[in-house]
Image (cartoon, rainbow, N blue to C red; front, side):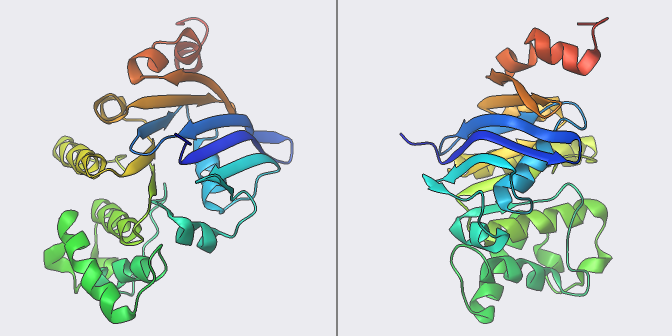
Length: 242
């Protein structure tokens, strides 16, 4: 079966810094893949290349077998890829329902504003924000902004969902709820790539891990295999502890 997403030798440099250096990886339908590595290893840059927020210097990115490495971000969203951001991006002057409706209107299955509002309410319920649908997003805590951003991403009806440290900053109860929510999405058949530092979540949710360091892939396999790889231990802990 052809992978849903393929990266072949993808690179991106900022001046002399090669943030992503020859990255090759793939994601099959129905997988939950963890993209992990130390801070500054190129994980978020890789997501930005997949979603068209950045353009690769070289290499190919295929979604459903079609090249997207030169496509505009809105066309990639229309094709079926949605994401959350490491630094949460909500529209503070809009209500929660309006924020999610925007995701529906500009997602894979475009719709009218009225239909978008209807589609927003069940998604707000799914992330625990249904009772606040008519509030302005500026009133939300940071954690609830994350929930809102996830609902907006889901409103786009993606085939591939990219989560950039969505579980970061949650307290233990919130983390348990967040893991359960992602697990429910996976059980529904959603294909997910998650950049995450919470290794308990990676072990609980991911079928496979891709580990990056200094822009390159250094390991790949099941969470147990990848996280016990000597190169990964060295990347996280350094030579003295590896």
